[in-house]
Length: 502
Ligand code: BES
Ligand code: ZN
Ligand code: ZN
Image 1 (cartoon, rainbow, N blue to C red):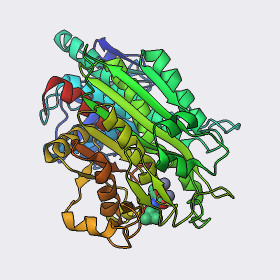
Image 2: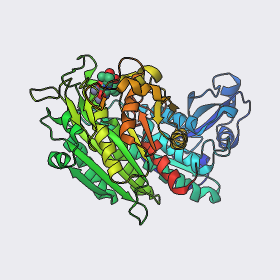
Image 3: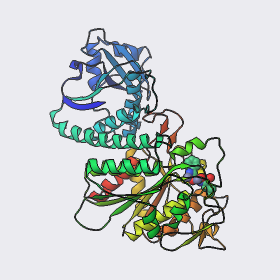
Image 4: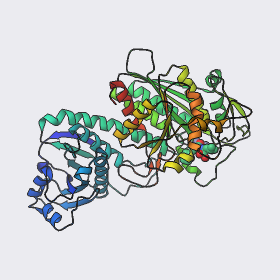
């Protein structure tokens, strides 16, 4: 979809459809909607009077203009109650409308900066969320489908304004929205790919390709180098897989110093069978998405490289499969992580924290000033929070707050979970420094407490996306399948750290 911003009068635009808004509980039309209504001889007002158009959020009413306007159709999109409007509602509403029009094979659409001037939404923000909503909501993953789609494609979305002064802001908003949405869709693509098409080597290739496109430094460490660095925990997980593990490092330099302002770490298990502690076969297919955190970090780095914030960012993805085999890691094995801590393996299915232990070790050894990790880490987090919000845990409240705020801006909800000292007890091992499972209760927290041991005193936040990395149903700007969650949160976080706002 191509999106552009133009100066003009929406009633004069030639397009397959133009979209105007109506708010629930209002009686009269406003602004663009009112002008369009006049051109249609009051057709919209009549439908409001008759009760067909109520303005409820996601209510879309399609009207054929039959030659009264240059546009063939008008959609009146409900945005709910005006006083309840948020920029995330604009994202969701444009997504729903675009899917409706795509299903009707409409290929060009025009609208105005929806929501601008209401609820403190600026024109720039409006263009940003309209662009995000349209691109995220019409995302499809058809990579391996040979039959034709049962819907059309919106090729052009035009954001029309009559206010010349708002053009630069709209352009900027659109540009940011496009970069954020394309990065999210890239992360979705990676997590939606089947595990035979998204091996650790494939992940490394994606990262390398992105680095070449946007001028990031990239390094991919092989088994031998992992061994030299003492990454025994990661190597333990990787040891039964025929696919070589890849330790992917991306480096963005936004300022001319050697310091690393923040490290972003993503879990990169390209398939999690559970290993010897094998998972039940039912639902195992979902574990192709166990690299969604890694995908989010790689995609976020692409966006960061395009938006050019003035700080240095290091990204780390320890990519491997987790498989059983004659050479596999066993419950009871003891591994030595980078930095020398020993880990008793209770379950080979708690593999994410093993790989992250070495990723955290690497980030710290390279002097990361603060760390955020994103991981599909525990079924327990999904049980706790469902697919409504991501769980956050960490050792630094200030950074946790910044991450939550960056998420809110993106429409990604993040809920903090407690990290009381007492939870650490559950991870104590009798034969090693720590064990990788802390029992049945508080599984999401004990997993985070395990990671905390390896984050040490570096300010660190862990995002457990086990509940949010996938959507079982289509809703708002989220089609079924991988969500690309955390990409926009991470990018917003880095942008806010660079400008000092937040
Ligand atoms: N990748 C899983 C966690 C997961 C579950 C992610 C469901 C997304 C959806 C992780 O590696 C895992 O298997 N965790 C175990 C830990 C347990 C053995 C302590 C779990 O949650 O059951
Ligand atoms: Zn697992
Ligand atoms: Zn896993």
